[in-house]
Image (cartoon, rainbow, N blue to C red; front, side, top):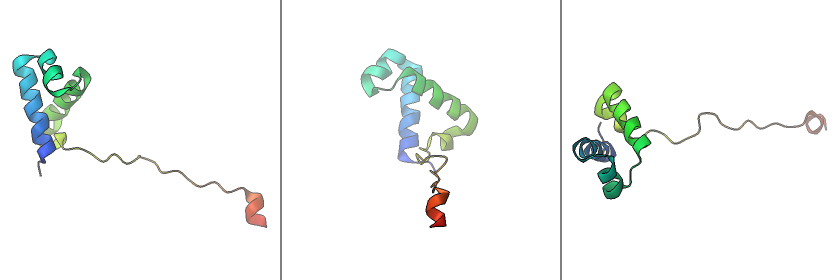
Amino acid sequence: MITKTAKDRHKILEFWWKFGKEAVLAAYGTKRSTLYSWQKVLRQEWLEGLNPGSQARKTQNQRVVDPKIIAE
């Protein structure tokens, strides 16, 4: 499923290809590195790749309990 965010990102990329990076920065506030990253994802995964991914951490913190506390 293609979300509204993915469509907006594609629209920003098309604007960049047509008018250049200065115009995109002024109009949308999108940095050059972000544009290149979106372009790479678009080439590899098409519009589906422009959907926002999970922002959750890859690994969760592991609780470490001192063995002395467990022994009590």
